[in-house]
Image (cartoon, rainbow over all chains, first blue to last red):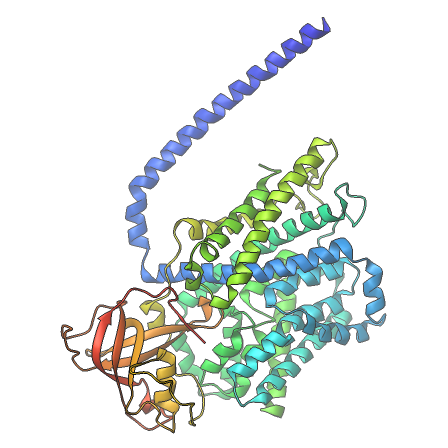
Length: 341
Length: 251
C-alpha cells in the first residue's frame, strides 16, 4: 500500500517534470529560433552600420578600463575578504588609537602599505568598517591608499624628472585631503548616509568554515564591485569619445579656470592612479598647480570610483562624499601648489 | 542557476581574461605589457574560485545545511550569495573579449588627441644607440627633434613604425599612440613624412595603414617651441607592415 502510493507519486512527479521540461524546451526553443533569425538577418547590417570609428574606440576604452581594473579589484577584494574572514576585530582596536581625531591621520598614513590603484581600496575600506574600524579612519585610508603608495610616488617621479617638489606636493596634498575628509566625517558625518553591507556570516558559525566564508565573501565582493567597475568604465569611455581633448586648449589661459578644468578632467577620465602622472606630464600647457590638482583629485574622485562607492556604501554616501572630497582636494592642491611649486 | 550563477559569472570573466593574456597577445590592445602576469594570475584565480565555490555550495546544499547560497535577501535588499544584479554587467566586457575583441585605438583617437609633445625642457639627451638605420619610437623621435640641444638626430638615418594619419593640404604623418597603464590614457606622437620615397606611389598611403618609414630628420623651427612641432622626417623608404603585436609604444 505504502509502496504503491510512493510509486504513484514518483510517477506523477516524473510526468510533471517531463511536461514542464517539454513546455520550457518548446517555448525556449521558439524564442531562441526567433532571436537567431532576427540576429542573423539584421546583425551584419546593423553591425556594419554601427561599428564606426567612435563606437570601436568606445569599446576599446571600455574594455581597457575594465581589464586594467580586474587584477586590482581582485587584490582589493582578496584583502577585504581576508580581513572579514581571518582578522578579529580586536586587532584593529589595538592598532588604531581610541580617539577618532588621532585615528584618522594614523589610518591616512597607513595608506602607504596598499600598493595598487583606487579600485583596490574601496572594498578594503568597506571591510575595515565592518570589522569595527571607525568610518572616519577607514575613509581616510580609502582616500590616501591609492594616492600615496610607493608605486604611485615612483611613477610620479619618473613622469616629472628633475622635479622632486611635484612628488612631495602630491604626497602632502593627498595626505592632507584624506585627513581633512576623515575629520570632516568624524565631525559632520551621519551613520544613516552609510549603507554598510552587514556580513551575517561571521568568521565562525556559518557552516562553511573560515575558508568557505572567505570564498563566499570574495565571490560576492568581486562580482558586486566588478559590476560597478563596468558601469564606471562605460561612463569613462563615453566621455573619452564625446568630449574632444582639444577643448582643453581653450582654458589654458586662466590660472584659476585651468585648475578647475583639470580637476574636472580627472573625474571624467578615470585614469588609474599609477598612470595619471604621465597624463598630467603630457598636459604641457597647464600650470604646475593645475597638474597637481589633476593628480590629487584623480585617485580620490572619478566616475569609476563614484560607481564603486555607490555599490559599496550606497548612493546617499557616494554623492555627498565625492563632491566634498572634490572641493577639499582642489583647495588642498591649490594651497600646496602655491606653497611648493 | 540561482545557486551557480555567481560561479558561472566568475568562470566567464576568468576565461575572458585568460583568453587575452595567456592564450594570445590581445591584451596589448588594452593594457601595458607589464600587467600580463597579474592578468594571468587573476584569470586563473577567478576560474578556480568559480569552481571551488560551485563545489562548496553543492556540498553545503547536499548535506541539508543552509549554505549562504540559500539565504533570502538580507535587509539591504541583496543577498550575499546570489550574485548581485549589477554583477551581470560583467558579461558585457567578457562577451566582447571572448567573441569580438575590440580593435586597438587608431587614427580616430590620435586625431582627437591633438598630439602633444612630451613636456620637458630643452637639454642634452643620451647618445643614440649604434645602428644604421637606428630604430626609434615615434615619441622618442619627437622629443629629440624638439628638445635636444645636442642635436643627436643630425646626420643619422632613423626608422619609425606607426600608422598613417592625414593632415591638411596633403601633409601626412606617421603616428603612434603611447600607453602608460591602459588604453584610456593613450597619448599620440607623430612625425610628418616628406619626400617621394622611391618605389612607393606618390601621395599619402590610406589612413590607418601600418608603415615603417626610413629617413633622416629635417630640422625646423626653434628648439623647444611650438614651431619645431610636429617634427619632420625626409623619407627615403616607406614600407607597409603588419600591425605589430603591441600596437602602442610603452612609456
